[in-house]
Image 1 (cartoon, one colour):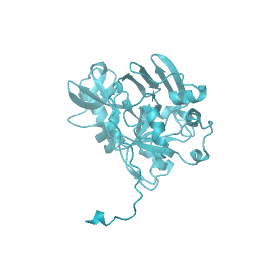
Image 2 (cartoon, rainbow, N blue to C red):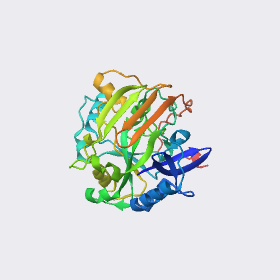
Image 3 (cartoon, rainbow, N blue to C red):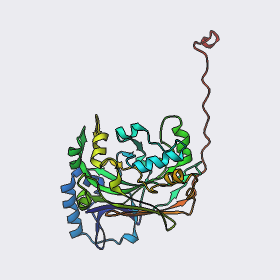
Image 4 (cartoon, helix red, strand yellow):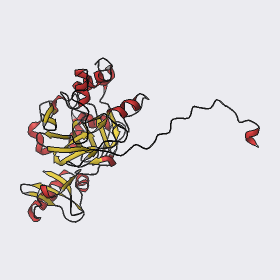
Length: 327
């Protein structure tokens, strides 16, 4: 089953994607409410909506992110992507040994999520804008310190994720040893809907990976293609690691990280040795399609001028207050 959230005539609704359109859930029920209720209850509510509500044509609404998650973690689970990006920042293309030891992730901004067809403003101060083709899983029930086997029962479903990246801002801030932060938190596309895990079981390999085709194009020209099954860890292993010593909760979103073979421009820049294809500019249209889930399509538009940033004050050398300071 596929759950969506949309806006029409100034009103937000949540519901199920049917053969002839979108079927609204009753009252103010949200997709997050359904996720927290659990997959069996969500499927029952979705079936009832299909039976009782009239469909709204998809092309008559603005698709919003399918849910508003409490947290968003983004991993880096594709070795080919990491290798290419390392080359792009001049580190020789050698993946550090620590990457293989555990799946790395960062927390991104849940307030910066945008819908499947929303415009994406260039972030203030950036001139090197990039996309990142990913799949995200949504946690279906709370859990802590889960094993990968236990984590399987905590998957509600999957959606497409585009982790838009300001490479110039990201490069500066990560030299400090923190981040990414402002290089990432201006926009993350989530959509077009949330597909329940049972719909994708047919794509599951023996090792637990989902063999889904992933593609991205810019202005109609394909620039990247990979299989989700080329991840180095399964989603269950990512969930297990995220929950180690803490909690993951229903509605949390965990991104796979960018796929390889052109899943982002940064990887291609590393492999080509030049910024080819060039960074995104206003007017560019980025479209991503993941087999079994759907497509998202966003246009880049001009953004705001940056607010002036105050440079750091050099630290004072005083260790004690002088007598005059105390009077």
